[in-house]
Length: 320
Image 1 (cartoon, rainbow, N blue to C red):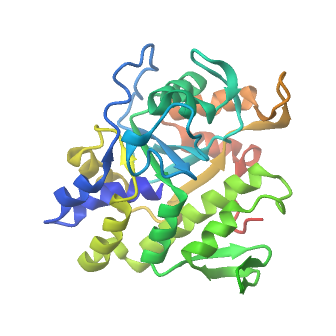
Image 2: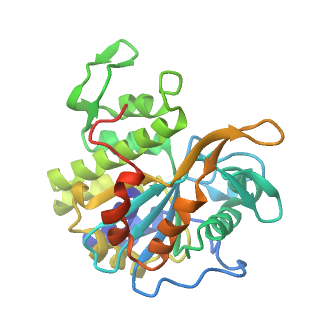
């Protein structure tokens, strides 16, 4: 969500918009050869597939991407409604067991490894029946730079966080540096729910960056905006369709959103299991997931959540 907000917000810094846009690495047109795509949303809503990876490959220099070289660590579907009053960020666990076109069943993050952006987009569209409008990829090291460019971010911790010789005690709104936030997100062994908790930590970091940007008015000050946007624009790769015109459109969609206007949750899952070949996998709950995705496709997520939020794994105020 931060990537979406910041890429779009480049347009508010007059005089440097073109330069900032030129910093964003081009992924070409990953939609060009896709067939049998879902119908467009009947409104002017926008759906963006956002990837986060531990690897810099394909985030800063997409020409270095090689089939089989890497898998994406975080997969998020961002839905921006036509009314421009809210935003919804849905995480798809990286180990979700799905059909990958041309490759059979596998973990969803393998799609990026097998065939890059195009195959992952095709896989997600086939899984959700939701048409993807734009595609953005970044890496977690870039989030460290973004966090430090903001002077750190505040996150509420359920337990203490140890990073090197520093210990951040549990509590509300603790100030974390980029390095500390990255350590928080990458923790695995102590998490009771494994990757489900790790997904929420990823969401919490994004929420905290969005809150810091909004509360500090980062994008309203040409000096702070230019500094921060320079950091971000050099950290992402996006499809060619996310051009200056599309960025201006994004400005109008997200410029007035605060962190409380953004809902974070994980798509419905029924738990974990084992594939036929012995892999540890996440099992998606299609009985609950399909109605959610129909709401995304019809731009009615708000109405869906008003009735079903208690049935979803929503991001809580304090993460484990």
